[in-house]
Image 1 (tube, rainbow, N blue to C red):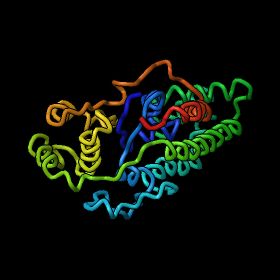
Image 2 (spheres, rainbow, N blue to C red):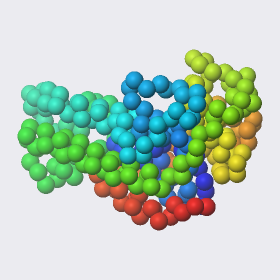
Image 3 (cartoon, rainbow, N blue to C red):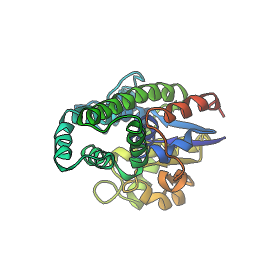
Image 4 (cartoon, rainbow, N blue to C red):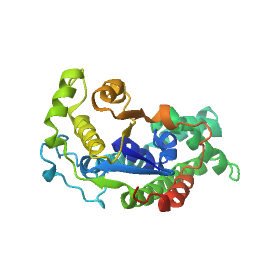
Length: 273
């Protein structure tokens, strides 16, 4: 059983079946042990808009696992807030000639669905209208039902994840030597690694040094994965970019069902390694 450190984007992908990283990281949950840190949990489900993104002392981190703030809330809010405004797209499709494909394309554009998540969205609408007449009322109902199903599944997935992902205390404030190496070899800020990401990267390196793991997975291609060769050279830790490591074109499923089924089926396989 392989042990991975996962960051906020990976947890979001395991939570939301319409998320851009869902298909990429879903296989990661099978037959592996996942670790993360308090700082990642803070970003994932605790950080509110007014809260700082950089917390110098981990003792100040709020890590209430039942909270629904952070990236968890951000993704849900986008989905909830944009549904009422989809009526405009439906009215336009009525004038232009409504088809299932046009409804799907309008949904993907309106909700800014990334291409990685498009297959499961298309699968949902195609199955929905395989037994229903394509009308403006049913198109609105399909979108509302999809929203409700995704949010219901996300709540369930988050609960299961918090029961099974191994959460360790953050230690980034103790990693002065490693911080100096990253600042010297990669840089911090606009042209280097962001200071927010630095905190969880240092946590991952710390866990590697403690013998808990030897690799971490990120969905952040532009701000962490691009530095993977330097991180591996300096700290002997494997940095995996989710799409390159786990992606499969075979993973096309209904958003509201398969992620739940997968996580439920693998729940018993996440015992301590």
